[in-house]
Length: 330
Ligand code: SF4
Ligand code: SF4
Image (cartoon, rainbow, N blue to C red; front, side, top):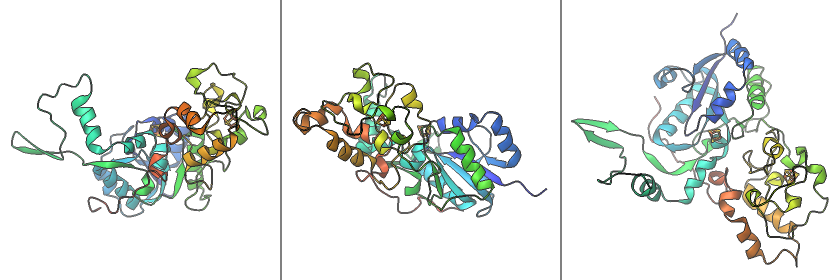
């Protein structure tokens, strides 16, 4: 029997939920472990980055990389994975679009450090110390990764071959993605390994969404009302990102009476889900009864935080790319 394909699973700026989605393969994980050789998985196994660095270029068949890039360690590991893996899959919404941590891009780096280390209630920091890249401590220089002034999606730092969105991504999509790599049955490079439809098309409430939807304003949010568990949220005047969001999540939020917040990212062909949603919302507002546009927008409360909750770094508001790695890859 030939050598098993090598797989690297790695998190950058991540909460661990994407790794948990892999663990949620349950018994299926045994099949994956049987079919491949896992060479890196910091969450589950005690591999070191040196083990990864010891491989040659493209020695690893596929890297599943979750999390955003916010510091120089994330960036260095992203470049190392890109060099050692033939195929890189951005796993989960943080890697695909920047994710919820991307909303930090609305604040300057210094303001974030001040809030966390100096001004937060409960912080005791009489000397006003802020973490530094180098700190002299008892004759030794201690190093920390450099904290960037921006949160980046993975493809703003390295080339990405495929995308599996979701916060966290459904285990089924991960299973299908790994299977597609192992059987060499992949779509064109750059594809998202999820259906090419909007969530509304697969939503169980779609049949209650009127052909001609009108919102008479103001827009309501789910915590302000008792939503009908059967009716389309937008038809009830409740904000739901379904029309602008790709499906593939299994409609888990909708099924628990929670409107879509957009974690699967934009529908195919749309670069900026927030502006797409605002334009479709504007078309739904009933002139005369919806009130003036400013009042309607004010009723959303935090439009940028809501409409770009998962996608700010890749949106037209927030797009930015790192020009080169902060450290050469060995
Ligand atoms: S996509 Fe969601 S589950 Fe995955 S690392 Fe980001 S926040 Fe966690
Ligand atoms: S707007 Fe939301 S609730 Fe209505 S059909 Fe679309 S996804 Fe379903």
